[in-house]
Length: 296
View 1 (cartoon, rainbow, N blue to C red):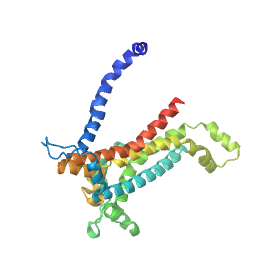
View 2: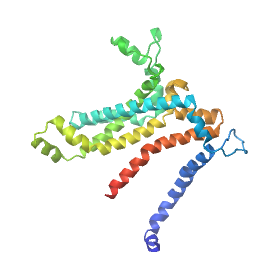
View 3: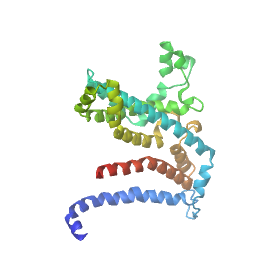
View 4: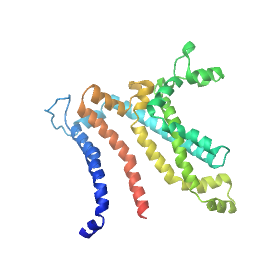
């Protein structure tokens, strides 16, 4: 043990500052947040907070607003992740087929990824303007001009399914990033593998179904984890497009209002812990699987 430390003392010395900062400002604050969630702390100068155990967690599960948050998160996550994966894979296959001006199209698809969700929300707030009549603008105006009136809708103001409207700009922004992941995976598949499949009589569709897509499973898993992480903590995009509406409420917005508007720090910390747990459900299994593959 001592000899091992002596051999790696330089590596340990270089990593120590990062490990200390990580321990204090990440895991330390996570621990502090969980500790606050187990109390009844309310207000800025409350020194009389009492330990109440899991009471905040139990009450939150019975909160009708939290039920709305869960439903909205499910609708947004499934639509966002599913459509983004499909679009990203389709764009990657298209670009991998050696289309003319490949570099141009790749840059165009990747450009939205460089824009923040706030900027995206401001632009798409105008594009998805639900106003009708003389005030019609954005996509609804375009649909009206080209004769596609059946596509005119209320977007994020649609009852029950308004989160699908919120998912549209998120899909637009992240599909290029997903395309880049799949394109890297496609370019990493040896051409000899495809040629061997063709010599065995496989059609192009069969090659994709039985050879290429199975080999892209690790890429797809990585993309799902990244997109799930984004969808579970979406906040700024909704605020920029629709503001604080109960119909479009998600845990992150509920947490913000509870903590910084109502100063109910214990309840806000409880919401933050639920968000952390939901993200961990996706991230931790992914890290375990990745670590096992690296050891093999």
